[in-house]
Every structure is written in structure tokens, then in C-alpha cells.
Image (cartoon, rainbow, N blue to C red; front, top):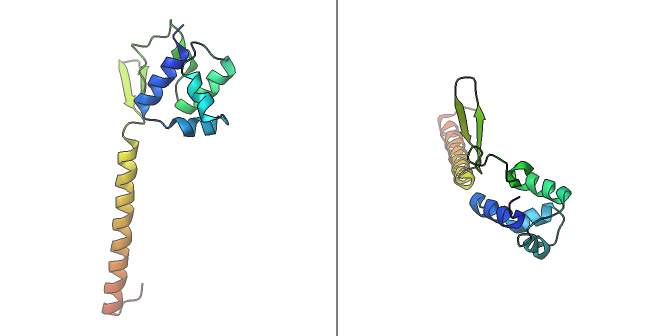
Length: 124
């Protein structure tokens, strides 16, 4: 079996997750959560909860898990024709910023339409 704490740490770093947020969601003190990342093994129920938070299957932590087929942050699946690969969770902050900018543009355009409509005497 892999060193559970090290693997959790590497997954969190690779996915750019916030350890304090994970600890809070697990109802755990952040310092205790940090200590877990130094442990070689942890309780199976706790591992399951952590896996839900970091979105990784508990099977990932076992040596016989086909890690070359299943990478962090991606979903791979064998299809009838060939391999299918979907990238999920990458660059989320970039997309959130883009959506926020889009919302600002929409509000500005709605304001401009309202002003122009009032000047033209059209009621919206």
C-alpha cells in the first residue's frame, strides 16, 4: 500500500485544493489534518471521507490500483471503440473569473439598453 499521507498531500497540491477548507469540511482541526499527511496509514472511514473531499477513489491508495490508467484530475474510461478521456476540475479559477467578467458585461449591456430605450421613448 502507498504512503497514504504523502499521496493525500500530493493530490491536494496537484489539484490546488485548500487544506483548511478540507479540514473544515471534515470537521477536523487544520493542524490535525496536516499531521495526517505525515502518517503512512489512516483509518478507512476517515480515508473515505477525505477521498470524497479530494474527489479521488479510495482504491487509488492501494498498490494494485492501475495508476497509469487513472490519473488525478482526469476521468479515463474504456469504451467499446477505444479509450475515452475527460479532463475535469482543471483551471476552475480561470473559468470562474471568466464567468464573473461575463456577468459584469451583461449587466453593463442591460444598463446601456435601458438608457438608450429611455432616450428613444421605448418602455422596456
